[in-house]
Length: 317
Image 1 (tube, helix red, strand yellow):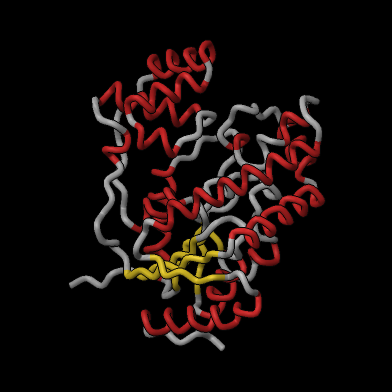
Image 2 (image 1 turned 90 degrees about the vertical axis):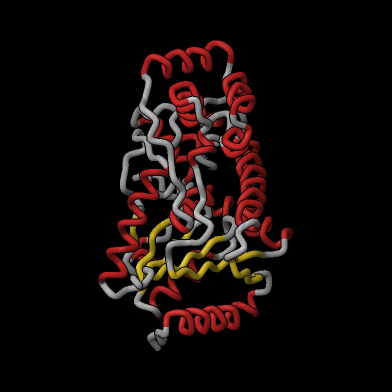
């Protein structure tokens, strides 16, 4: 029987400490990190996406960071194909692949091999739907999807117009809902360890608020201004990312910086809640509470024992 490829996945809400843990583990287990974040693929979008520093990125090999321009489209199906290929290559090198991130759909598409629609594209239909969004508003377009495919509508924000249109296009051209195509394998095809990091809500929200403050200090507003100056349209999927879509109205003079910052904090807290809801339903995840910093060494030690036992591999001391 063919041996399954090894895979470690580290998930959890934003600001919980996934990056620090992944670097520690990847260094000790000859690991390579695959980013499981839908925003870190974009070049030039560094502060708002909370990319690891160049120094941290140099500690272990990283993949699927800075691979496309913000003007380009990137889909979960593309991520699935790239990550699946990288997992095989990393295993063949004798290293341990770590997928690290908080985009639940992206990660689960790999760990449980979702099957996505290959429905043909219909440019004429897409143009018609875009005109509907322009004339009646994105909420009307999203409501139309909700009537057809409430599961897909639930996971897509109304502002994510391109993906809402694609979901409607799939239904119109095939007669099937997008959610019908996202079939989840009952068992992962990988020799899998899934680590989930969690934290008491008040502590997590405090960390989120602090992270946003640090992003502003680090130049998030200037980063967004530079992207707009490059001619990027505010409606792009990349520019709808947390931290970017809130700063844009400030730069247009529509709101104060204080409101923009508060909006980022509030929406990031809501996003963290949705992340936890997604991951909580995955029974394969073993959860670790990171609320008390004093517990961190013990948590790391426990996880190292889990990996060593699972893969019969001793950490590099």
